[in-house]
Amino acid sequence: AQTVTQSQPEMSVQEAETVTLSCTYDTSENNYYLFWYKQPPSRQMILVIRQEAYKQQNATENRFSVNFQKAAKSFSLKISDSQLGDTAMYFCAFILGGSQGNLIFGKGTKLSVKP
Amino acid sequence: NAGVTQTPKFQVLKTGQSMTLQCAQDMNHEYMSWYRQDPGMGLRLIHYSVGAGITDQGEVPNGYNVSRSTTEDFPLRLLSAAPSQTSVYFCATRGGFSEGFGYFGPGTRLTVT
Image 1 (cartoon, rainbow over the protein chains, first blue to last red):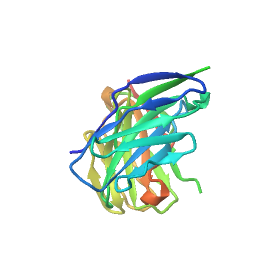
Image 2 (cartoon, each protein chain N blue to C red):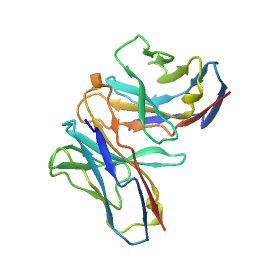
Image 3 (tube, rainbow over the protein chains, first blue to last red):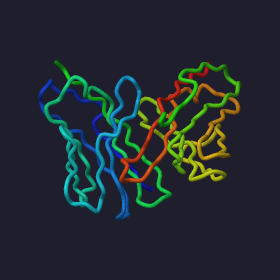
Image 4 (cartoon, chains in turn orange, yellow):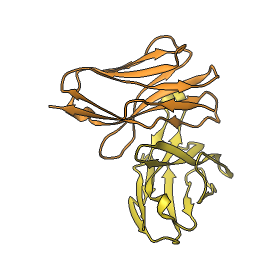
C-alpha cells in the first residue's frame, strides 16, 4: 500500500523569506504522480503544483517549486518570497498512474507566515 | 461552470439521525469521491466511483453509503450518525492528469452530538 508522510505538523516563516515543507512517500510502483495542495482558512482545497514521476525536471509554479528525489522517495515544496496569503495547511498527495488510482494524502503541515 | 458543489455547508445532527450529503459536478468527470478531514489526520477516502453505477470503498467506509445513478451526482449517506462522524467532508472529482487533477467541493462541516 502507498503511504505519504509529512513530518512537520507546523512551521512558520517570516514574510519574504523562503520555507521548505517536507514530504516522503512509499510505493513500489514506477508510474505515479505527486501533488501539493493548499488549504487556506476558507477550507477550499487548491492545487499548488504537480510532478509526474517519469519527469526528472522539478516542477515550478511562480514562487512554488519542488525538489523531487525519486530514489529517496522525497517530494519537498519550496515557497520563495513568502507572503501572508501563503498561510494555510499544505497537503502532499500521491496517486498511481492509470484510471483507477485514488489520491492518498499526508496529514498536512500548517504553515504560518509572520509579518 | 459551477465545478463541484456540495450541500449543505454546515449540519448538526443528533446521534442516530440519518442524512445525505449532496455532491454535484458539471465537468462530466467519470471519477468522483468522498473524503473526510479530521485534525491531524489529513484527508481520508471514504468511497469513490469511476462512473455511473460503479462505486467502491475507500479507507474509511464504515457508517457511510453511496450510490451513483448519474454522472453528475454522488450523494453520501450517513445511515445512523455517530459522534465519530463529526468531521469536514469533501467531494472531489478527477479530470485528466494534464488538467491538474483533483477538483474539490467547498466542504461540509458536520457535527454529531
